[in-house]
Length: 199
Image (cartoon, rainbow, N blue to C red; front, top):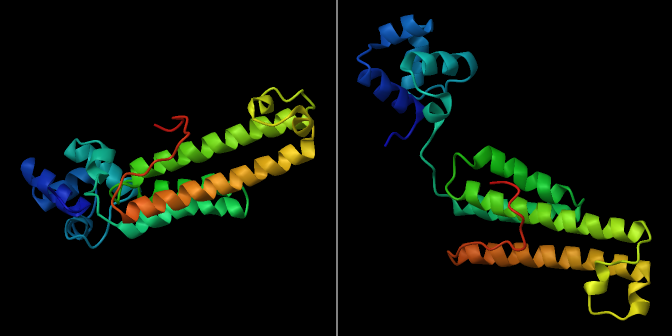
C-alpha cells in the first residue's frame, strides 16, 4: 500500500502508461512540479491536485487518502481536548472538533474516537441547555421532577442550577479521565450517553 500521495500518484501514472512528461503536458503542470510531487518534496494542493485527479481519472479524496499512522499520544491529546470546557462549555466541543478535523485522515483511531467524543459533548451540552431553559422559563420543572429530591429542593432554582453545574463538570471530567485511562490500557473508549449526531 502506498505510504504517500506522491507514491500513489506515481503508481497511478505508471498504471495508465504515462511518463512524467506526458502527465505534465496533459495536466498543464510543469515537469518539475510532477517530479517534486512524486519524490515527496511537495504535496499537491488546490489546482495541482485537481488537475492530477482529472488526468489520472481518480476522485480527489481517494487520491489524498493516506495510510493512517499509529500515535497513542495524539489519541490522548484528542481525549483530553474536551477539558477546554473548563474555560468555556462550548470549547469542550470546539477543541476536539479541531483535532478531529486536522488528524482524522492521518492518525488511526482519531476519526472514530473524535466522533464519539463530539457526540458525547454535544449530547451533554444539549441536555444541560434544555434543563437550564427549563429553569429559566419558570416551568414546574417536569424534567427535574425525575430526580430523587423532595419538592422543596426541586422548587429551589438556585440549588438546582448549582447541582446541574456541578454534575456537568464532575461527570464530564470523570468521563474524560476514565477514557484517557482506557487508552493507556489499550481498551476501547466509552462515551455515554451520546446521541449519534455525527456519523
